[in-house]
Length: 636
Ligand code: WT7
Image (cartoon, rainbow, N blue to C red):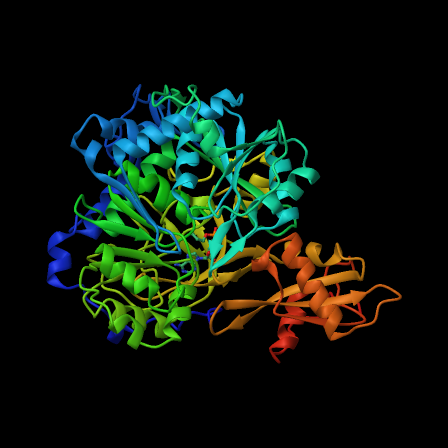
């Protein structure tokens, strides 16, 4: 279903924005802005950069001398946390609400910009007192709580590089990420609430630290209050540290180079080793704030809800950084959308008067299942704009979101982008006529195309590779500790042309609208989460029963894709339902719940090339009952 969103070119299904939406829109003429940005990208980006406060202005907007190691706003001095917090404290926004938060149990907290700034300063001082200095990495492993945002901003403020690991990852996945980043400090919490249950974050963190002993200090937020083990001289309670005299509300903001690293965020690629995507202070700040302002039209009166997890790029860019840079009011919710009933989200929209809501197709499909009666119980008239991200949105889910939630008044901003791109790349503006299932056209400043293997633009309606032909300020700068992989992965395919390879296939239609088809590599999108087949496979083979494993993604109504795995057992092990269960548990424990295969099939051989590479495409074709294609490289 999501493997091929929808056949393109159906102009009959054009959804026009309402006059109220158009009237409010910040950008009124897409074509004019797009043309201006394309004619002179550097002055376009300089203009966007001027909306931020710089300690020193840049000398050069874009440096291409060391391409593909592009540099933006060279010579500029800035700190993203200064733009997210410090500068608002000098204005009326000091007393504006920055964040409204609701816990799964219904407890709430509200932070003004002033309050958030104070907490960030305090935690910045705490981190400094633990020996964290500019450039040091700090791993953060938490649930959806305000302190996650505070910890991230505090790192940024003191020039440390945060590496947030999503709370849905488990022991080995966390250990690998700590090890790769060489973090000496880990920030976590006792447990997180999810569906009324406790996710044992501290327990998982303890095991991860045992496996990656580079960690010297663990800061533990008390959230669930259940008993957890605390290691003397290593583990400290967040509230104890924040009560110390050292945790003053004044904390000097580190002056950073525009190109100094801000964070590492690990994402899945084609090998089992996660890629540490590196973003910087300057270009990233410019890019995320510009894109949020243009696409979601965010204004001071808005109440913005990005329902993603801050542990993913969506949360980094559009919960933590862009909204605060714009001085917006954000809402964050801790728990599951269906807890205790499937109306929870709609109740929150009504209660907090959410005006712009941004979520993922998988969440929409999940809530759609419970029927329209749940949202219909609530007054959703505060909503003005809706958004979607993470995978192609199937037209059925699109229409449900549009009609049942948005009451045909709210356009849906289907935003295509990646961890690597930092922010939205292909997305409508509120004024854009929409086609359900298409992210529409590239944003001003972005040159995207669909090309064949040789780099020729393919005609409308034909599949090809999605490429970006020009650098942009929010682009990743490298893969942490692996510059060679950065070049190989993203820039080697069209090296002489200098194009960025996205890893997605797509089609363009007659109107220039882009339709994303799916990944061309061994990456599977499960409920919008990005997973490498290799991560699932290495989780499986780390069990003593498994000799070899192969994982593929198969289309699924609800999750977009599910994982299907094939295992060859070692001698002495018998295939059985109990073993299948044990292997699933093993993957849950080692990699995380999101990596658990829906089904494991025991086989005696796997299709391989002569060089020994597993041919996942053959497995997939067989599972789907489709022709197996070219088998000339198959060994047996
Ligand atoms: C991959 C990137 C960007 C934040 C969350 C995902 C897929 C993302 C869309 C969309 C179709 C999409 C692509 C992309 N994807 N947004 N609107 N329509 N596909 O970030 O985990 O780095 O995954 O997600 O396949 O390459 P990510």
